[in-house]
Length: 233
Image 1 (cartoon, rainbow, N blue to C red):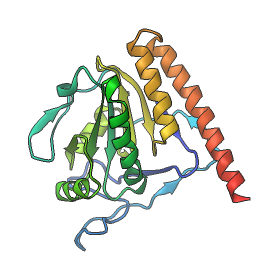
Image 2: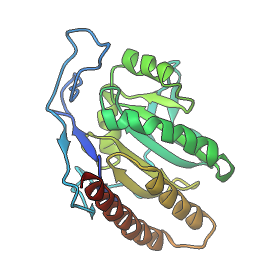
Image 3: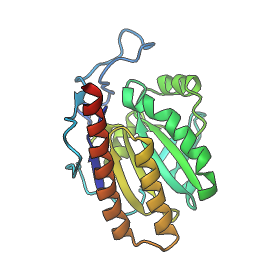
């Protein structure tokens, strides 16, 4: 199941020409050299939308794909290395503003949900030197895998074109529970992770969890959009 949320502040970035050999960013990284490539501007979704089924580039997998990407120290890692953990796999880039806003939340989720066996994995679709520098500056304390061009293939393995940010939620057995497109908010993350925990405990079937997530995220986005409208008056 894929959910695309368009509540207040939602911004999704689409990379141009995903099959090219170079990366195309929506806006340049502030500290990047002048030759850094640029791409199309960000598109802001309408706040009236709640939850909609997006059209993925390919079929979303039922289980985590067996991806191998280097970590910040250059050591190759496979997603299956974290088998036995509930996973939140977050695709991001340094030039993506909502991606950057998510990082404090991802850090706190990893800390607060450690008792539930949660691990957060960041996959940077970005230049490796930019990702390494930003990871240090933002004090990212969860594993970061460096996508560069391989990040496109990683996104495609999840049935996605490179739209950032997006987050994949999987249970301890590697089953993909849901995929959230756009900036992840604390209430959404908590709701989804509670459903993942219910699946692992046998309290919910996978299909029931997906239905609850879709309806629950819809309610949260309607509430968030209403709050934005009220704040504008």
